[in-house]
Length: 139
Image 1: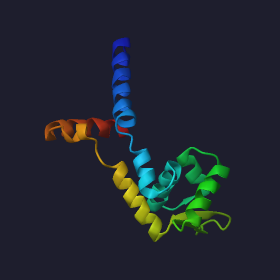
Image 2: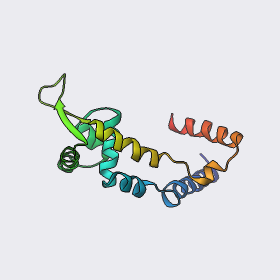
Image 3: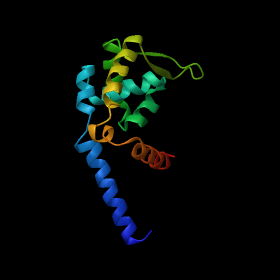
Image 4: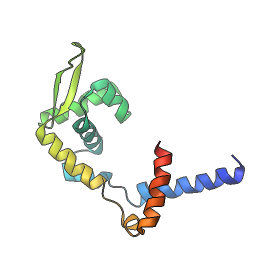
Protein backbone atom coordinates (compact mmCIF):
# COMPACT_ATOMS: atom_id res chain seq x y z
CA UNK A 1 0.00 0.00 0.00
CA UNK A 2 1.36 3.39 -0.92
CA UNK A 3 1.90 6.10 1.70
CA UNK A 4 -0.89 8.12 0.08
CA UNK A 5 -3.34 5.20 0.31
CA UNK A 6 -2.29 4.51 3.91
CA UNK A 7 -2.86 8.17 4.81
CA UNK A 8 -6.31 8.06 3.20
CA UNK A 9 -7.16 4.82 5.03
CA UNK A 10 -6.15 6.50 8.29
CA UNK A 11 -8.37 9.47 7.54
CA UNK A 12 -11.33 7.20 6.73
CA UNK A 13 -10.75 5.27 9.95
CA UNK A 14 -10.65 8.48 12.02
CA UNK A 15 -13.89 9.62 10.38
CA UNK A 16 -15.62 6.31 11.09
CA UNK A 17 -14.42 6.38 14.69
CA UNK A 18 -15.69 9.96 15.09
CA UNK A 19 -19.06 9.09 13.56
CA UNK A 20 -19.62 6.03 15.75
CA UNK A 21 -17.81 6.74 19.00
CA UNK A 22 -17.66 10.51 19.33
CA UNK A 23 -20.88 11.73 17.74
CA UNK A 24 -23.22 8.75 18.11
CA UNK A 25 -22.04 6.65 21.03
CA UNK A 26 -25.14 4.84 22.22
CA UNK A 27 -23.43 2.89 25.04
CA UNK A 28 -24.55 5.26 27.81
CA UNK A 29 -28.15 5.35 26.52
CA UNK A 30 -28.23 1.55 26.24
CA UNK A 31 -26.90 1.18 29.78
CA UNK A 32 -29.44 3.66 31.13
CA UNK A 33 -32.29 1.93 29.29
CA UNK A 34 -31.32 -1.34 30.97
CA UNK A 35 -30.40 0.07 34.38
CA UNK A 36 -27.00 -1.63 34.09
CA UNK A 37 -23.40 -0.76 33.36
CA UNK A 38 -22.44 -1.09 29.72
CA UNK A 39 -20.27 -4.18 30.37
CA UNK A 40 -23.32 -5.89 31.83
CA UNK A 41 -25.46 -4.76 28.88
CA UNK A 42 -22.87 -6.09 26.43
CA UNK A 43 -22.72 -9.41 28.29
CA UNK A 44 -26.51 -9.68 28.44
CA UNK A 45 -26.96 -8.94 24.73
CA UNK A 46 -24.34 -11.59 23.93
CA UNK A 47 -25.79 -14.34 26.13
CA UNK A 48 -29.31 -13.51 24.93
CA UNK A 49 -28.08 -14.41 21.44
CA UNK A 50 -26.35 -17.61 22.56
CA UNK A 51 -25.46 -19.16 25.92
CA UNK A 52 -21.73 -19.02 26.65
CA UNK A 53 -19.28 -20.37 29.17
CA UNK A 54 -17.73 -17.84 31.53
CA UNK A 55 -14.43 -18.24 29.71
CA UNK A 56 -15.99 -17.51 26.30
CA UNK A 57 -17.87 -14.55 27.75
CA UNK A 58 -14.66 -13.17 29.29
CA UNK A 59 -12.92 -13.44 25.92
CA UNK A 60 -15.82 -11.68 24.18
CA UNK A 61 -15.91 -8.87 26.74
CA UNK A 62 -12.10 -8.62 26.84
CA UNK A 63 -12.09 -8.77 30.63
CA UNK A 64 -10.52 -11.21 33.08
CA UNK A 65 -12.31 -14.24 34.46
CA UNK A 66 -12.80 -12.92 38.02
CA UNK A 67 -14.47 -9.75 36.75
CA UNK A 68 -16.63 -11.83 34.39
CA UNK A 69 -17.82 -13.75 37.43
CA UNK A 70 -18.76 -10.45 39.12
CA UNK A 71 -20.68 -9.35 36.00
CA UNK A 72 -22.54 -12.67 35.71
CA UNK A 73 -23.24 -12.83 39.46
CA UNK A 74 -24.91 -9.41 39.22
CA UNK A 75 -26.99 -10.45 36.20
CA UNK A 76 -28.05 -13.62 38.05
CA UNK A 77 -28.91 -11.62 41.20
CA UNK A 78 -31.12 -9.34 39.09
CA UNK A 79 -32.90 -12.33 37.52
CA UNK A 80 -31.54 -11.55 34.06
CA UNK A 81 -29.26 -14.59 33.67
CA UNK A 82 -28.75 -18.05 35.03
CA UNK A 83 -25.98 -20.62 35.07
CA UNK A 84 -26.90 -24.08 33.78
CA UNK A 85 -24.87 -27.25 33.36
CA UNK A 86 -23.01 -27.49 30.06
CA UNK A 87 -24.48 -30.43 28.10
CA UNK A 88 -21.07 -31.66 26.84
CA UNK A 89 -18.81 -30.74 29.78
CA UNK A 90 -19.89 -31.54 33.35
CA UNK A 91 -17.18 -29.24 34.72
CA UNK A 92 -18.44 -26.16 32.89
CA UNK A 93 -21.52 -23.99 33.23
CA UNK A 94 -23.27 -22.09 30.48
CA UNK A 95 -24.57 -18.61 31.17
CA UNK A 96 -28.07 -18.15 29.72
CA UNK A 97 -30.27 -15.07 29.61
CA UNK A 98 -33.62 -15.52 31.33
CA UNK A 99 -36.84 -14.34 29.69
CA UNK A 100 -36.50 -11.06 31.62
CA UNK A 101 -32.87 -10.83 30.52
CA UNK A 102 -33.83 -11.31 26.88
CA UNK A 103 -36.38 -8.48 27.18
CA UNK A 104 -33.80 -6.12 28.69
CA UNK A 105 -31.24 -7.19 26.05
CA UNK A 106 -33.73 -6.48 23.23
CA UNK A 107 -34.46 -3.03 24.65
CA UNK A 108 -30.76 -2.16 25.00
CA UNK A 109 -29.93 -3.60 21.56
CA UNK A 110 -32.67 -1.46 20.03
CA UNK A 111 -30.95 1.62 21.44
CA UNK A 112 -27.56 0.45 20.14
CA UNK A 113 -29.01 -0.34 16.71
CA UNK A 114 -30.66 3.06 16.19
CA UNK A 115 -28.89 4.64 13.19
CA UNK A 116 -27.58 8.18 13.56
CA UNK A 117 -29.43 10.97 11.76
CA UNK A 118 -26.50 11.44 9.35
CA UNK A 119 -26.90 7.85 8.16
CA UNK A 120 -30.66 8.19 7.85
CA UNK A 121 -30.11 11.29 5.70
CA UNK A 122 -28.27 9.31 3.00
CA UNK A 123 -30.22 8.35 -0.09
CA UNK A 124 -30.83 4.65 -0.87
CA UNK A 125 -28.05 4.49 -3.48
CA UNK A 126 -25.49 5.89 -1.03
CA UNK A 127 -26.65 3.46 1.63
CA UNK A 128 -26.31 0.56 -0.81
CA UNK A 129 -22.72 1.57 -1.64
CA UNK A 130 -21.86 1.93 2.04
CA UNK A 131 -23.47 -1.43 2.80
CA UNK A 132 -21.37 -3.14 0.11
CA UNK A 133 -18.18 -1.54 1.41
CA UNK A 134 -18.97 -2.46 5.01
CA UNK A 135 -19.74 -6.00 3.90
CA UNK A 136 -16.24 -6.24 2.41
CA UNK A 137 -14.66 -4.78 5.54
CA UNK A 138 -16.51 -7.18 7.82
CA UNK A 139 -15.96 -10.29 5.69
